[in-house]
Amino acid sequence: DAQLPRPGNTSHPEDLFAGLELLLRFKPLFLPLYCLLVAVACLGNAFLVGCIATNKKLHNATNFFLGNLSLADLLMCLTCVPLTASYAFEGRGWLFGRAMCHAVALLQAATFYVSVLSLAAIAVDRYVVVAYPVRQRIAPHYCGLVVATIWALALALAAPPAWHTSYVDLRPIGHDSIICEEFWRHMERQRLVYSCAMLLLSYVVPLLAVTVSYCSISAHLRRRSLPGSANLSQARWDKTKRKTFLLLVVSALVFALCWLPLQVLNLLRDLDPDFTLLEKRYVNLAQVSCHLVAMSSACYNPFIYASLHRKCRAHLRGSIRHSLLPDAPGQLVSSLRTDYSQ
Image 1: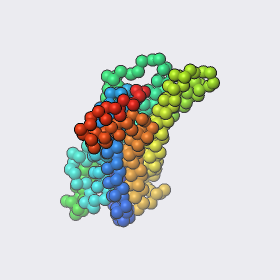
Image 2: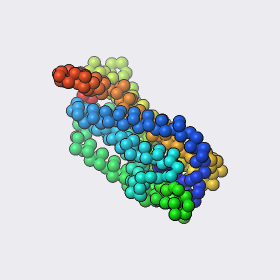
Image 3: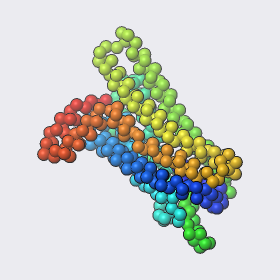
Image 4: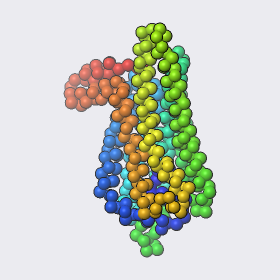
């Protein structure tokens, strides 16, 4: 759950205004950072999705799952991040209507679940490739089925907070503000159970699966790197797989670290409804800071992928040449001939 500021387990709307004045002092700092985040993430992920979609040499299971991860990040940065950032710093509250209030609550949680489930799918796919190298790769239509299942599961997991999100117009009672927040009225225990379950199912368990999978991959690669255990072609194959392995480990680690502060803060707020550990006046500032760090995870994948993957760099160089020299289409083709298929 990444919506901000998120009272979660309180039924008192006045709690939302605690610390708002302190938060607004940091508006000149946070808004440019959010704008930079959206610009970088949208450009990077749009390029990565386009690169995977248009280059047939990139059409394999791992890249499809990476594309799904980038698509979720792109959707989040085009819709959720700008609207929630505007809501956090707009004195009049939520200005985008009742329908968008519920839609953003659903999308914001769903895109997070899609990201973490895609990382888990990538880890499993890479383990199968390394542990069973002669086994046939997952067919594209099966990849589509896995992606559809990931989105369906993500939307199902995101439904409860979206259902409990309320659009409250306070103008009739004298406050020039509209609230779009998650309220579990008289259901504090259910809210706590849901939060703990989602922390385990959507963060701890998938990342644990990623860790176990990558540890197994590392063990397989170490065994094959023993002297005399592989011929030249096998060594070249292992070198390629090690590079891909590094790419995916870095991607999963960055995602986990970016989302950790927000996950911890949300858990603390669910366990401490009376704000004994964190003063009310600092809650909004802490929530926005952690939200910004979590959303920044959408920026890093395109750079990690491009820095370690020769195909993406070649595609980028070819695209730039094609845009600068539209009369020389052969240069784009020649740049892509240097790609390798794994």
